Length: 419
Image (cartoon, helix red, strand yellow):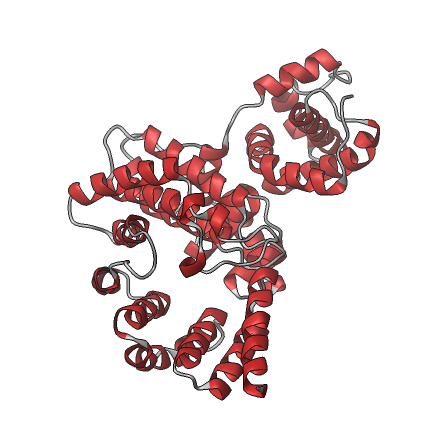
């Protein structure tokens, strides 16, 4: 044993290793529920066993512990006799030595790409694909996923149970599609990766604005997906470029206290220049590769921000034009809201307010709609309306950093009103 790990450190390790460990356990045993259960048990055991110090190979220890737990559970099941032949090579092992655990660390394969194609199989509903990927590959809790989808936790739990049952019942294969099948399966996988990235880029709840682990996982999986393809796919290049450009701003999006910093106030010298350079090359290649799709247009919008030295010299009219094209390809009230914010920057809050107000029916429960409307009211010096909108936004926000930002905005308005 070397070093120590407190509960918070173990939680970070769980986030980092969950998807890799779960995917190989599913491969080994063919059972999502069993794999999740034994992996949860392994992390719970680590919380006790590692109090004296870390094992030489934490990942190998967790994998070995979970794997032996799964074998023990299958031994106890009534149907074990039917599985005995298939499990013959897995059974009868003694507790591994430190050297064997180190070897398991080296030999734990990376099966996450196989798992994502299983989670994103077209036999599953689109919302189930995303939820299952977030649960299995990224280790989000059912409650966290429910928050991201704006549904009750019980609803999300049932959705996950049905998705796993569908995989078993339909005998969905646990494999990467063949080269012939791959192009047809890309759209579902790209959408899931995009949504995983979005949850990392702007966490739906919790104490951090950004979930860097989810951003990194989405970027890593997107890179792997690109490496599988024999020919470049412009929209996949654009998706990776979009992720890199957005994630490049991560360090500047919060201050040293972890508080939210708006784009206008960000220190652009803290943006990750290497990621920006790589992202720009990918976006340019995607735009040259054919008609721009939704990811290419979103990436182009991000690129316009990256090219400017500040908010004041950002080409907001170009951004509005790109949103116009995006709305044709991907009609969405959230895209329309983002376009309205760009209009406010290009033409002023008076021009944007009617565009925001017409989205009320569709976005009345969306905290960022209320926050956008509050900002327009603040700029128009309609303080009472701004206060009301900020209060509505605060009541609906689930992320602690966003809630504190909204509280500060509200306090500023109330303080100014009292003067």
